[in-house]
Length: 457
Image (cartoon, rainbow, N blue to C red; front, side):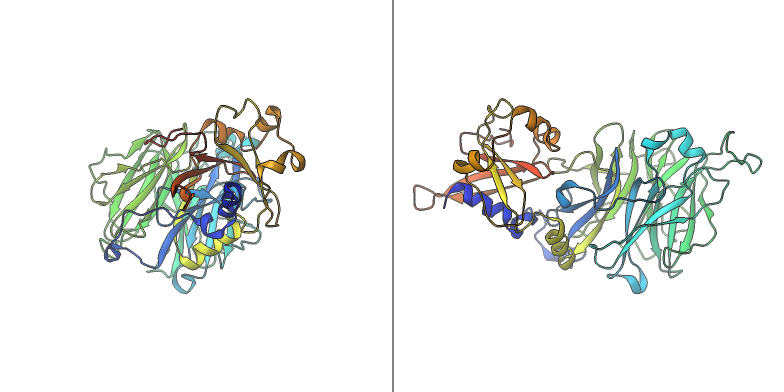
């Protein structure tokens, strides 16, 4: 088999598109939920106020790949036309396992300013719903806050079994009733909430957290390892620019204390905390913190939620520039469906271009793979020049995937294959796919390139 055909077959196969990485958990007894085989992440990307989906490589919480070729899954047309802080919510009660919601902030900051967005910002939230994680329909925009509020930011929700409803929460700041145009000074941001059964009608908003300082970006997590009424909540102190955690063992409206003391915090210069339970390790919590002035979300873990003890996750295979979002665990059927629908097209036509200009001429072993159609035909390099002219340096730098491919050589997918069996082999060939757009670069180590023990070329 020609190596070019081998790699075309590799990229075109639905099994490779999942590329589950080896987990460090091998004992099935320690799994928190054996039905969950991976994670779905839902994020926005800073200057791109839309909803993007990322699928984990198996149950590896530190390795995700973009779905839909890195393009947006949900693009709102109502309201401001931009969505931030998307949160995906598992259905509760009778909707458990068969209903999911995504809610998000109605804000396109490119059309306004941060000051204006907190004075006369949207008082509504975007809502999508699905019964299969694939079909989400059109968004609806639902007003949840009073006119005295200046904005509704970072909405999220949790199923409250004691009420049999979803508790939806968000951050708002308020202006005096004598200041209907909101030109004066507002009070500190506080966390508000309402209940809903269907994300269509909501109870009147009330205050959930009115801290001594301004707070935003609440994330709630139930902790079954500590008891049915145990929760953790994560908040950003907007004045101090830090994220901290609090714990309650007597319900959502119980007594909350801060592990480590009243001044303890997790990290500074971060926002948008999101915590979720590990699929495999009982009692393990995964936490994402948005380094908003840097490269977005970074992962952390803890196995003791009664202490302020968080360990940095390995970011080698964790995507950069993901902004405030959310993650849920998913079962095999949902994982396979997402991968089949938005992963690498199993029937894609792979185009291969050999590098021929200064852009990659020094990077031996790199070829372009371009998924451009729906046939199973693959072109070897020998006929590329006639059928697909080589790209010029100007054309290469104009590619949407160029910035991520050329400057940040961290693969979105990688693996090894045995070749040349019976012909002096087998030899292990390392391969990497770089980029998330329509055109990608594949690095094949061993064909004129070397890869050291640290994964560097």
